[in-house]
Image 1 (cartoon, rainbow, N blue to C red):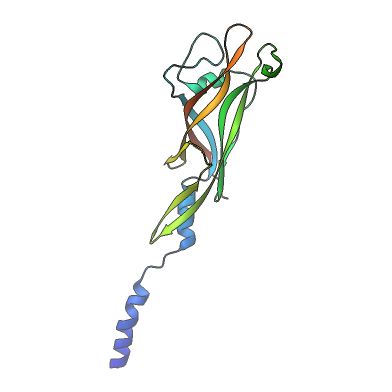
Image 2: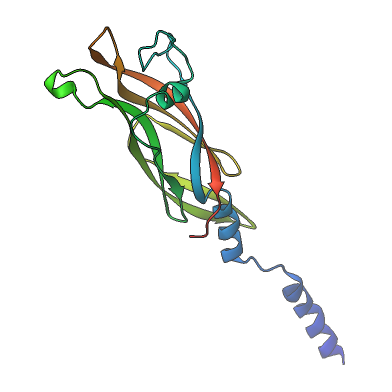
Length: 181
């Protein structure tokens, strides 16, 4: 009987330990980011506001200026368990190469990154492998991403002309649809 008591006392701590479920911790980490994203806002962060469409009303609201261009469509941003792609909005003058009358189109650059869930004890978090550039990427909340990056785009200048300008924008992406990978 004494041997049985000792065995029970010895085995009790082993059975009372909480088991870490790696898959559950990975899912918890990926749940914070995976899904389809839409741009909620984009702010021009230069000293002077920007007037993309040449209407005389410059603004730091880059996204509103970008949306004022009627040609071109929205891009798709999505994040899965191992990789993600965010669309960076910019404007191109499709007639700039041949000096024709400016024709501004909304376009997107792809910002591709990799991610993985890292388990440390009973907790998990995400680590990101970003493109080799000067952009700042942040998972700023549950289903919320911010990206600060430089963008080069065309803006309307004087009548019949466009010019290129480069500046920093801060884009806020909000998850519009959750999806499993």
